[in-house]
Image 1 (cartoon, rainbow, N blue to C red):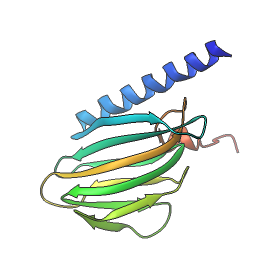
Image 2 (cartoon, rainbow, N blue to C red; image 1 turned 90 degrees about the horizontal axis):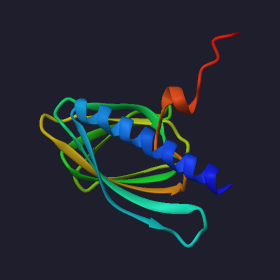
Image 3 (tube, rainbow, N blue to C red; image 1 turned 30 degrees about the horizontal axis):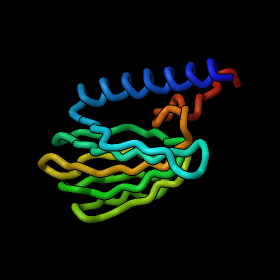
Image 4 (spheres, one colour; image 1 turned 90 degrees about the vertical axis):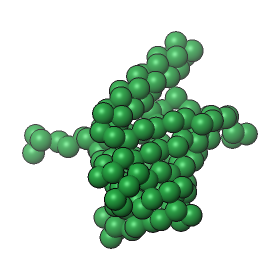
Length: 140
């Protein structure tokens, strides 16, 4: 059981590292600020600053828990599930329920940043791109 937990944590770290490397090449930088276990066993809070370069976007993805977004600067457009896009400016907030597919893009003409707070299950990848979260069955 311990070996399985360690392997899952290792896989999660690899997926986050690869995702982070891809994002940085795309002009998006993720900086983890803090990570703490919550009183509820198996849940942790993670805070991340995400900086979006001019004209950048992050594709459709999910998280294994809730995401609370606070826009620090600039203008960001979020597409949550199939709802109409919402554009937020510095000081605006957004809540994304667990497992809901969403995306974000810098809708302004300069850098934009958000503070993302995740309340997620430990040992799970922090994010899954849409193809990983909902694999498509091509054998109909």
